[in-house]
Image (cartoon, rainbow, N blue to C red; front, side):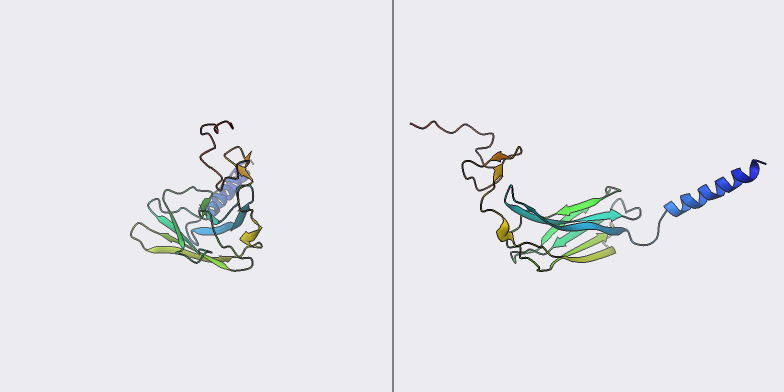
Length: 169
């Protein structure tokens, strides 16, 4: 009497396990992306997050090419396998010249060890803001976001963690 339930449970388990083994279809899906304006350190970046949809080749390469808002050469970032099985993230260095409502293209290419293209993702991102909304200098500096009292021009100036300034005469 218990035998039919065991057989049905085993059959259901086998079907569910087979459904989890996705070895066809796209390797990667776009999980998110866009612009980040960090007003505290007066910096803008953009990036993309990818979700692996199936096993990626351990010896593969992912190359992400981002348009450069300042008009220079595109940013080309790459990662080699083995890859994180849950999320793969690419982020540009700090940007200059981001304009609101202008499309900036990102191209992601997954290749195998021989260089054969396995998948290509192309997407345009737009910012809702111009870079002009950022302050000229960081409002805070250092890893603890100390107030920028000496008007430093970078988020990590030499004064952070360095010698104390000379006393006033």
